[in-house]
Length: 400
Image 1 (cartoon, one colour):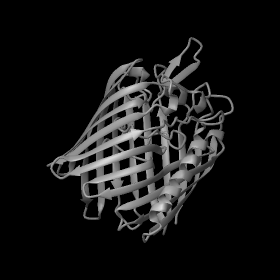
Image 2 (image 1 turned 135 degrees about the vertical axis):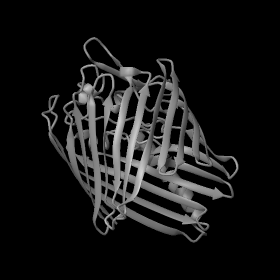
Image 3 (image 1 turned 90 degrees about the horizontal axis):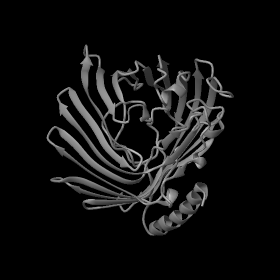
Image 4 (image 1 turned 180 degrees about the horizontal axis):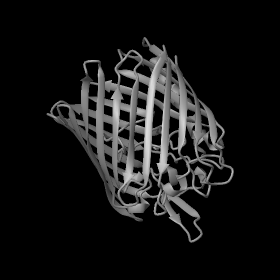
């Protein structure tokens, strides 16, 4: 069954069940719309044939929710639609479409949902439930909706425990022939196979325990199933073969709050038939609050990133230092700026990043983003394909 047919069948069946549940209850509904108009300009000439320099695009994300039984039962639906010059960025995704039931100290969610794990700024190692939406963002912050059954149990003494059954795997999308951030060979999601004979229908399982102990916020996680990252193999001619391996992953994340300082740490140990490795991201964030009594908050961030896979790390972050600053103006326009860089201690490759946003009017937000690849070494296995993909983007978002 194609994923689009699976989505439609799931939506129809799930809607019938939820509507039957709400027939006799008072329902409170909300609907929100987000419209994005974006323009991305790439500084350098394309590295591969048919790539472009300018990419205007439009994104639409409606979110509909309704709740009943005094908020103890809820249904949330959110979808994202994108139109772009790159044919692979013309797509839609069901971000969330789930029913949630809460009672006493437990909660049950069934459907498509997004779940975030992690504390560090530059890389989210433990965040494995959802597939990355690599078509929308280069930094891995955007995620696809994941079909799941999630059961959560809460205790003030013992923390919380989340259990996940994930019946279906979402493939990662890649740029098309006209798109940037692609390999020399155009990868199509449907062409990437699986190690498992059950392919995308291999059942995945995950669990996470988290707790607050004084100044310590800690999480322990486990995942077993289809990996979210494809495993890449290259032949002598540079052709790429990729598939999703079966993996087992243990994760640890914690954050210590010591006044104005946040100490952050994430680590994973991942085991597969093809490889096993340890990776970590450790650092701190110090915030200067209300500078000169004008409401300005300035945060300074430093992190060290390590990955035993060395050059085979898909992120390219195998022995790197991240540095940056987060500035919040705390004004009525909600102005904020985040800037920084990642420096590879082995290859001297440098990636500079800046993100800024400001509200122009009620429901109207302007944001800019820039990324510069500098001195990309020939030793970089994956980043070498993106060395000419430095860009600047301007986005205007309207919320209703």
